Every structure is written in structure tokens, then in C-alpha cells.
Image (cartoon, rainbow, N blue to C red; front, side):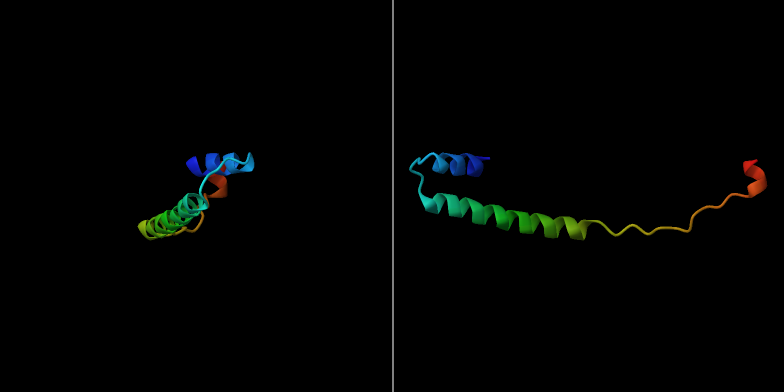
Length: 60
């Protein structure tokens, strides 16, 4: 959120140091990489079973 506000402020020619903006962007990418790796290892893939086919006479 702060990154978006700072980028909007820069659009209106506010004086914000580039180092703060680039550091926030780098930190955000780093945290998202860690988050995506942690979530991908947590869950096992879903194993699908064969569809259940009921007897045609029972459905009537």
C-alpha cells in the first residue's frame, strides 16, 4: 500500500528518494517468492478418482 502511495505521489512530482521505492519493490518481490515457495510445498496435489456410475435401473 505504501509503495502504491509513493508511486502516485511521484507522479505528482513529490520528492521521494528512489532508493526507498526500489527497496520496497525489491522487498515485495522477495517476500512473494518466499510465500509462493512455502505455499507450493504445503499442499499435495489432489488425486481424482474414477467417476461413480450408478445403475441405470436405480435412477429410474
